[in-house]
Image 1 (tube, helix red, strand yellow):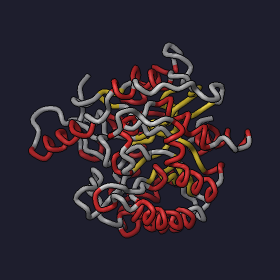
Image 2 (image 1 turned 180 degrees about the horizontal axis):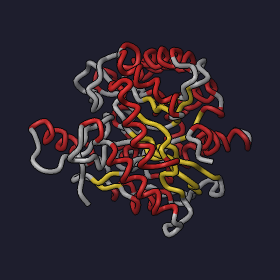
Image 3 (image 1 turned 135 degrees about the vertical axis):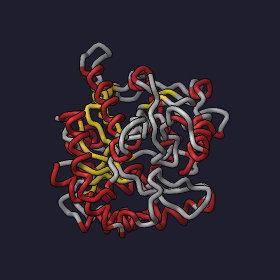
Image 4 (image 1 turned 180 degrees about the vertical axis):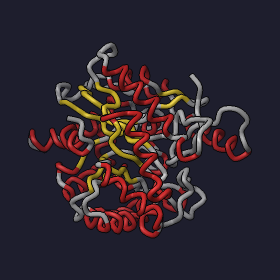
Length: 372
């Protein structure tokens, strides 16, 4: 399988690789992937073993990736090994990670290769040959919204490539002046969501086409998303990874201080009824929990205890009808196995009613991504 070009939209190893000769910067990005992906150790993950809690609870995983990089592979077999580890995963949503970009295409159309590839994987899963999980029932791609009104033609091309599976895009805006924090592949300005007029021109096209938007940025930038959501009150937005609370570099050992700033920003954002939030993505290096430095993986109890303040704040602010648990695999796989993650989420939701639990694990994602 040929790998396609692209760059990383996240501080995690979500980056594509160019076919053919590479520039110095492209080789540097690939080297960064190798270093970051080396943190996923299957032998270490195998040390974690737990009985699956509530195995009959239906789950839609609304955030995972698929890729085939020179340093790491996570394709349908690897995903099915995780989703088949005991929890009842009925469907999933793929979120862009710059894999399988077209090598020979105008820059704005290269990401179309990823959508085409994932739609093929979704068709394979829909055949039933690989089990009952509807993998990539929803596809969130990448289209550069700074194209402005020109983004419409590109968005329509993605919709044509994936049909009803194409649900929206993610255009990452993660920016930080700290050298320890990686910026997005789009090399965004500090306030992309707030200040870029061409971005907002392209953003306006999403509503016209009935597409949703995944927002990915870091906690100091949450006010930018608030401004965007208020400017487009009819546009459906989901905040990825509880808003990206940072915990490395200049943010290390400041968790109490950072949480105190993050919490009111989340509560204010929840005042926008067009915004939902994904509960997860806290196992990445940038969050600073350092689970991957332990001799053994954390238990689901330890994960739940560590993440409870963030998850409970979001559920209290947004309500279960605008919250959805997510795996963010394989990026979060650096910290614990898939089965342990979902056990942790079930522990965090243990006091919820049956209806609220259904929303947190399935129906919010189904409604937001129009999966029914």
